[in-house]
Each structure stands twice: as C-alpha cells, then as structure tokens.
Image (tube, rainbow over all chains, first blue to last red; front, top):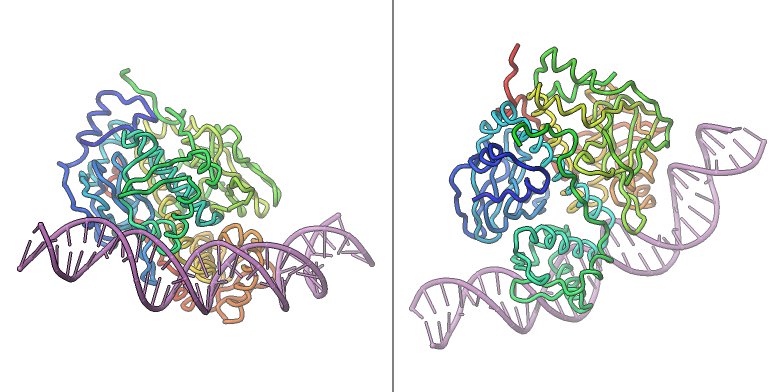
Length: 243
Length: 243
DNA sequence: CGCGCGCTTGACCAGACTCAACTGTTGTGG
DNA sequence: CCACAACAGTTGAGTCTGGTCAAGCGCGCG
C-alpha cells in the first residue's frame, strides 16, 4: 500500500482525495535488489509510487560516469520529472528489494479537472523536490566531502523517521560505499576514508548495513545547510470543499 | 510585459489562459543592477514573473559561502520554490537592471479551480525546473571545471535564443567572474584560468561583457550532458476546452 | 583624471583522485 | 557443511585538479 505521510504532512486530505491517491497506481510490483525498474532513455508513459524498499534514481554522463541524483524512500513519487519528456531522464534501480506501483500519466488528467486540490498538491510535491535539489546542489557546490556525508546521513535520518524506520537514532543503511560515492560525486576510496574519519571522531557508528548517529549535534554542526520546514496548506492550494 | 514563450513552447494556450497569465502579476517594478529583490529568510507572500534583465537566485551556507542556484532570464518564474515554505529559500538579486512583476500566492488558487490546464502547466514548469536542477547537480557532481563552464555557456545560449538575444552565436554576458564562481562552485581565480583556457583553445571569445561561442561543436563535445527536449502537451495535461 | 572593482598572474598548498594490493564478508554450489 | 568466488571494504603511495594567498594591471565610472 502506498503510504500517504508525505501528502498528509502538507495538507488535510478529504476522504475523496485520499481515495483518489490510494487507487491511483496499478497493483504493486516487486523488484529484487540490484534490478532496474526503468532505464534512462526509454519511452515513458507513466511514473511510479514508491511502496517499499530503497530505490536509486541515477543519470549517466557523456563520459560514462554515473551519478545518483536521489535515493528514494517509501512514500516518494518516482520518475515524475520525466512527465515533461518523451524519454525517461533517469534510471530507477532497486537498492534493496523494493515495491512500486505504476501510474500511467493519463490518470493524472482527471485529478487536475475534478480534484483541483490534488492538482495543486502535485505542484507542491514537485516544488518540494525542487527545493531538495537546490539544497543538494548548493551542498555539492560549496561543501567538503565530510560535510556532504554529514548532510546525507541527517537527510536520510529525517526522511526515515516518519516511516518508523529509526530506532534510537539507528536505521538500516543498505548503501554500498560505491553508491555513496555516486551520490556525493566522490570516489569510493575517498568515501571510505571520510567515513572512517566520521566513525573515529565518534559521530557515527557503522555496522553490518546499519548506521547509528551517535552525536546528532556534532553532525548538525558539520552539516553545511539547515533543514527546511514545509508549509501546511499554503494559501495557493484550493480549500477543501467538504470538510 | 511578461513574455509567454516558456509556456507556449509546451502547450497551445487558449485566449482565456493567455489572458490569465498576462494579468497574473502586479505592475512591473524595476531594480537597479546589484539590488536585492527579495532576501533569503524573509516572510514570503508571493513570487515574481521575470520581465527583463538578468537575475540571480542565491543561497547562503552555514559557512557564509554563497552559491548561485540559477541565473534567471526573462520569461522565468522567480522564487516559486518558496511557495512551499513560510520564509524565502533564496535571495533574488538583480545582475543587470531588471524588471519583475509580483504575484501574491493567493492569485494562483483560482487558476487551479477554474483553469485546470494552467494548474497542470504550473506543475509542468516546476518539473521542468526540477529537471534542470538535476542536470546541474549531475554536472556539479561529476564534471571538471572546464566541462562545467562549457555547459554553462551552452545553457545560457539555448535560453537566450528564444528571447532573440543571440546574434551570430554572440550575446550579452553581464556575469562577473566572481558570479561565475558562485554559480559553478569554483573559485574566481580558477574560473579565470579556465576561461582563458577556453578562450585560448578558440572555443569562445570574451570581450566587454559579451560572449561569443566560436566553436559550438567543440563546446558540445566538452559538455558533460546533452540538452533536453520538453514534450508538447503531455497526456496528463487536461485538453483545451474551446480550441 | 584618479580611484575602485574586476581581471590577471604567480607561487605554493591541500583535498580529492588514481592505481594497486590486500582483507573481510557473503552467498552459492558441490 | 565446507570451499571458494565475487564483491565490498580498507589501506598505502603518488598525482593532479582546484584552492589559497598575494600582488599587479587596466578599464570604466564618478
């Protein structure tokens, strides 16, 4: 089932809207770890709702290098940027075993005409993702390797929290160091060194695909940018009719 | 007047829609070069339509460093990401003398309810910007200084073209090297060296705040990523009623 | 006409990369 | 249940891209 926490964090959904969102996608499909869900450059006819697991959205450069634009978690909307294109902009790869639900683009059309609030909330989601990208860009542009890693861990922590996947500041962390490298734009070797450094400084503990944030305040002090608070029901979103 | 080319490139607007867009903003306000239009962290109540000139959207890091997230050109929508926040995410600064038209957020609400196609096109615009950010992020993450500069020039060239501001692959280029540095995440000194290198290689010519792309093919070969073609009237945008 | 900002250049430094070897872990098939 | 292959992680040595600091230059504006 598609979790609605991302939507409910920014608006009170009417039963009708909630129903429209939960029935939006096809039946869930499971992918094994390492499997490709959708490849960059293929024709696109829809996007995906993220039900379960971790999924990477990556892009290839002319040089053949790969960059992971974002690690997606349950509740996210996947591959929606490609709705302005004919061919997919990014490759979606299952990091762990993962479940997604496909949504043909056409199915959005009635949302805009019949449930304008949802149309506005789709804009909201896009803008929120855009903001996250701006932050990522700023960090990539002006922060050191260690600062980037600190931000990555805090970001994942904050996003896993509403999923109930964080216990005592510790959570499953399935990313390999190579994937962290593709995510930060660093090399695997350098990622390794800086990770051990963070570890040695007592800020984090890594063990068997789990990560524990030992010193959240210390990490926050390193992080190059603050966290953002999304606005609930902003004044441009139409008002719910039947609440 | 607010130029609609960005919108008309992706959809056939009805007269009603065109009217709604052109009457969306307040009367234009002019800012002198170097002036701040809106500062990061201040309360936001609306966004801006970009009428004229060059405008930078920048963000400060904890360290005090500045990063220019994007250079905006006429026809752009400015500061719209902050519509999901209470306080502005970015600072808008006029690079040249520039004109903008303010739009209170509330004014978008009737667009979603009464002109659902425009609601969908606002989502479209947000997704297109998001895509541009993904590309910028990928480039920042995996490209060398020279590659980044090549991409910057090609990007500006492509965006200035529909404005009629490019003559014989030459256009006004008001950015200082310090601003280019803030835009690429490099230092002004390094920007200078790489610019002269591009110049010496015969790829570009700089003179008196103008830039000429001498060897577009050569630049394209250096650029780390291709250009994207936006889809016209994608199948999720509601169909125009009275065309 | 001169002052200041933006551009240029040089010398040196450092963070991150490359290459390469080695270790530990995991999962799989005999 | 063990052997081993494959892969992830670790470590070291040397290099290079880009950063830092500092000084000089020149155009354009007041």
